[in-house]
Image (cartoon, rainbow, N blue to C red; front, top):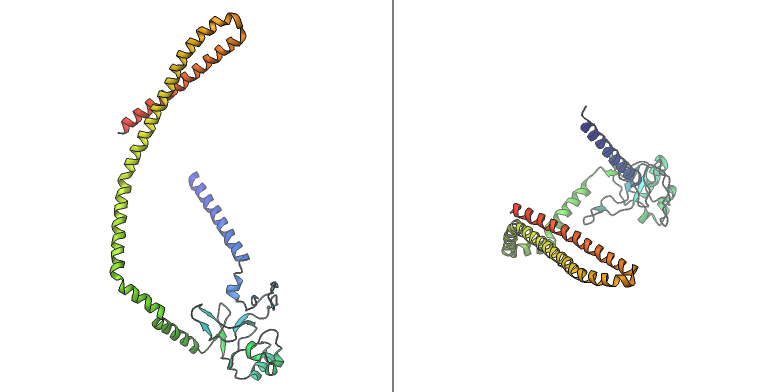
Length: 301
């Protein structure tokens, strides 16, 4: 078998494992169960035990036997936020029949064990509790059935969702901000079209400039490199020649004084010779670099 194919297959397996690990970690720690099983207004996920949330009352409840999400007022829909403005609870059974009184809510809780009011209210006390008007479903409670996948109690009668559709149409048709926006676009259509044409022309001009300025930039950079190399090489040769002239005069003077002072002058003379040799090496290397750049530039041209 081809080793390259084996290597490519191994790399793909490693990538798939890494991606699978990331997805698994996201699902495990990101609360994906809340999307499938649903959750109440207190942060509890339906159908499982929950950990308490600091500062949130009625959190951390055991909802193992409460698998369905029930909204106290399912038809109270916020068009702007696109959500149901209602208290959500986890219940063990969606109400299959219409309930018109709080006595019906009590009877349903006693017979089926599914309490449709908030968790802190006892089912057998529903009719006499003052909190029933805000913590219990809005009467009459429509019959509902759970969705097959997402475990939400959905009203059988979809008339409230028809009202929602009507409200959306009214919002789109009558909203003053939308009207002003459309009117502004219609009044300024000539300016908008002109700006679009101008943007198209400027973009084409910019493309042409980029196309031809690249060659100009290459010429400028090449010229700067060549001129810089020539200048550097000239300076190095000038320093070397100046050092040779100064060094010859200094060497003759040192030779005359060498007989008198000895070792110190010999060291100074050796240092001057080393400096001259270093300048010669630098100047020669710079010359080779400059000639190479010049020849390369001429051939490219």
